[in-house]
Image 1 (cartoon, helix red, strand yellow):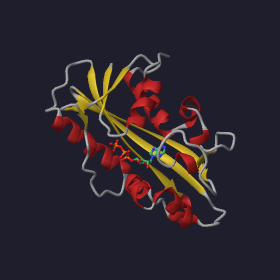
Image 2 (cartoon, rainbow, N blue to C red):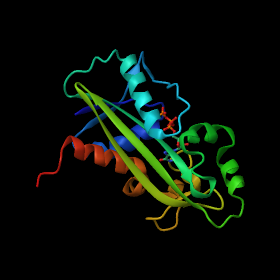
Image 3 (cartoon, rainbow, N blue to C red):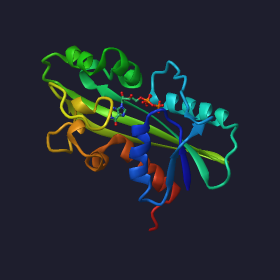
Image 4 (cartoon, helix red, strand yellow):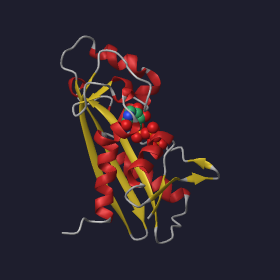
Length: 197
Ligand code: ITT
């Protein structure tokens, strides 16, 4: 299937290519008049609501004209810190751009309860329907940033299933082994091609 990923975040597109490409799908960024879509993100309590709003905006921008064999993918994701009651959650992008990673580290201070998770909800829109999937990656917030790979909160997020390095210190393939986005997209791929019994 040709999947047009509506996002302003080029890291998300490369991650999706790395995951869905080997599963037989073509992933391309959705461009409108040559540029990625800039979403108006609704004030919402959950990333699911935001993801469906993004799909609506992407469908509107393309006038819903999708041939068979083509679908639009959107995804909303965020970092949910346990001791901050899930903050920044749906506001992750905004918080990253305002107080930044150092701001989140300051909110936690020296607190030893540093559990957190990345969550992603992916929605695929195609002729005649939508599919939704989700993925979670549990981890902890490091005491200081490390690494320059990935994006967003990767330099301060240490996945439980790793070896103690932050996602910022991992290669793209290593991050894809554990990432919330990879899990949501693999689940999406199984909805498209259920494994034969
Ligand atoms: P689009 O809305 O255009 O897709 P965006 O980057 O604004 O792009 P979101 O609204 O889904 O994406 O916000 C996700 C934010 O959550 C992102 O900006 C990061 O701050 C954080 N985040 C999500 N997934 C992440 C990941 O894999 N690594 C690091 N930070 C991540």
